[in-house]
Image (cartoon, rainbow, N blue to C red; front, side):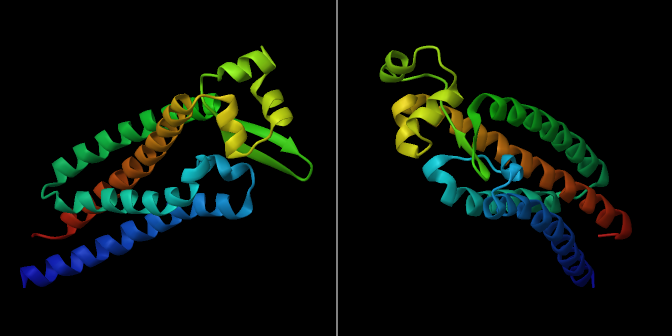
Length: 192
């Protein structure tokens, strides 16, 4: 009997956490399809873009399932509080990284978002001097090849790692927090 209750509770947990996860993960997909200002929800990562959404879904889904392993409400409450703090810190870090590494280029009928590095190549320093990042991208181009001519590979990789890491930390912490609250609710209603 207890095993049946536990199975029903796990199924309910998966449905609740899964629906919240699906709603959250739909935002980056929408940003990729619509190409609007909401593209900030999913950082532009150049050649890595095609892998980001599936990888994000996997990471976030896994983190959403971890709270199911928690056996006590108090532990689940502490986990929810801790992951809520991680969410806020990751959100702040993501905001800082976006402001440093994402550049918006306004072109007729749309805006293009690209991620850049923090260190210019010697060629870019010599050619463009103190011109802004936007001016350099408008004059040179916004393709991945153009970006790699303007910023060093190492600084681009570093910037994109920070963007992706903070993006995934936001999703994982959010789903862990939601999962913890769902687990608290499940533990409150069952005597397993």
